[in-house]
Image (cartoon, rainbow over all chains, first blue to last red):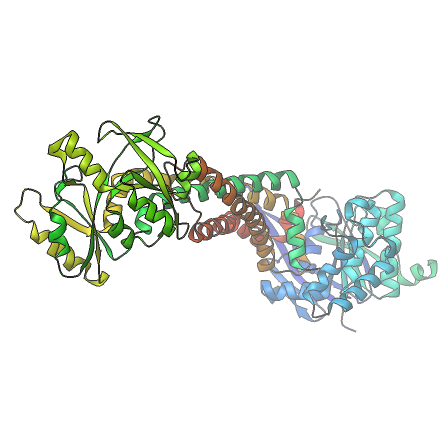
Length: 238
Length: 385
């Protein structure tokens, strides 16, 4: 079966103070459908950049990125926006919820871009909030929720359009240990029960341990694939 | 969840900032409306002029009178329906600050050519019977509390001495554009009195109001009148009533232009305030705009959010500003009635107020909207934390 994500010779550099700073050097990577991949590495190693490229919110200088058979490097801005709306769910470190919208409205937000009717949108958003255990907090604003609850709303927003791929950039970076565990368990469930492919950038070794595999990124290169957790081992543990 | 809901909630997010901006807009829209109404008041005389009325005056200057016998010659010009001598009296009531317009007129032809002055028949008859009678406008009566039968002593300035008149009629303007703050009295009374006091000033007319049959032929009729008196001691200049009134406006045109400029400066100032508000707003929300774009919303949607918020604030301020303009203008008109007999907020002024507010809303959002639409997702998201 073809991998969901396939990167071939992907390079990216930034211009800082007149100098070109290479961030990613010819990255080649395959991620299978249903994988839960942890990306680790020191600050500035390029892991968030790699995540952004795969999620289609940044463009590489060179190389190809195929996601579910689509070379997203060839898509224009508008096509890429449409592709993101249907194919990727985002989970950010600081949740990135709209503070003026309730939990329900935040989750419903991506569905505004679909052709679903109002009642269908309502059904989907309620189901997503039920999935993350916040059915009773639908009318709460982000400021009325804890960090962990906000991140659960963000996860509900990420899955409400039923994307194949979920990208999570330090999803537990702003949470206490207990809330972080809840979020990681939730990501586990999305991966195992709903078959979502998850890419997670993290600094936290404990969080990375929940992934099926860990990739290390250092100085713009994937130095090794950390098969410290084989799927079978993980599933047995669960 | 509609875009409108998101726009309105965003607009109310910083209540103090939005509130202060709206207050600024209210003040600007109100000030703009009042200044435009002042300009309109300046042109009120010209705007209420009728096309079938001409004014014949001394060609040298308004200061110089014309002989009364011109009346019969003008009346004989083809196309002329009526002629009324008309003199500016220029007196004051009790104190020089109590100034209002007084005119000596030949009542019957004058009132025939001014159908917008509505006078009750019995009052008109009483006025015609009384040589010292006067007709006053409703606004003037309200201002000083004059009633039918009251005596009004006026201190003459152009015509020296104290002149006493009895209020015999009160006229009402046909509409809001009609000046009903004037006093009219018998030209004959003025003339006969002047003949006694200063014979050389008898039979002298300030202007002749001329009613014509066909407004389309006003130019020809005016030329025909002026031709009668060419090479005489008092040559005439005949023009339409509108041109005559605009001549007065032209004397103070610099003031009108200055008021117009100030009214637009007010709008420009609020534009700067509004642009600052929207720039701050958009800068603070860049991470949110980046998030929306990451979720798949296009640059157009993000720009619409910024423009929508700016327009919502601008229209909120405009609505309240326009609503306040009417009572404030009414108060202003009552207080300054002696300077601005007609002080009405026109539909054009309201439209201009709304258009300016909309313009402010759109222009203030141009740069922030463009920046929000163009924000690179990665850079916008990096601003969080």
